[in-house]
Length: 185
Image 1 (cartoon, one colour):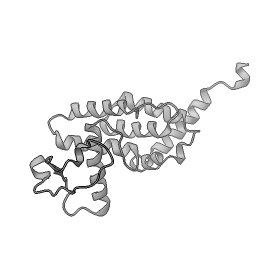
Image 2 (cartoon, helix red, strand yellow; image 1 turned 90 degrees about the vertical axis):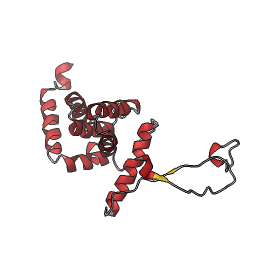
Image 3 (tube, one colour; image 1 turned 30 degrees about the horizontal axis):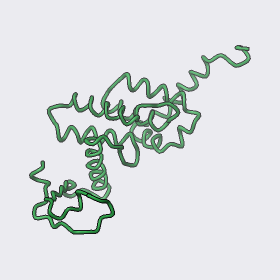
Image 4 (cartoon, helix red, strand yellow; image 1 turned 30 degrees about the vertical axis):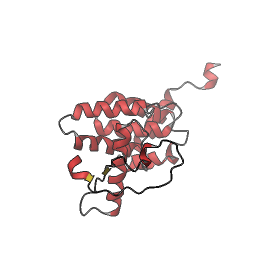
């Protein structure tokens, strides 16, 4: 991959840097540029997604936050890209992407509808039942806190059209089992 993507004969443009001792501004230092092209013939949307996923691959390598339209899709795309670059390690790739998501606190669902929906998307994609159950339970529990107004929710109902009905049914089921406040007092 590196041989295909390293740009040869790169021209280093000298500029005034405001940071003292900035290693990126040393004109005597060898500069390597890396360009990973989008698949040939890809449309504008596919090119955008390819470059965002490439950026997120490096974010994963350097333990930095992801970028993208939705967190759930960014995590799924990251897992797929890691599988492309390391095809013999699917299970290890899955564990490392989950570990990365935990380290970035994306799997901390407390008071965060977007994180629980993103984790639900990832769990469904990589087929981790425990993560799916935890994320789904949090989605049901937080459905009154702006679940339907979340961008993750709009994306989630696109990849899982039954999600809306499942969440609503589960919410009503929980409401029916919960004792009323007058019964407690």
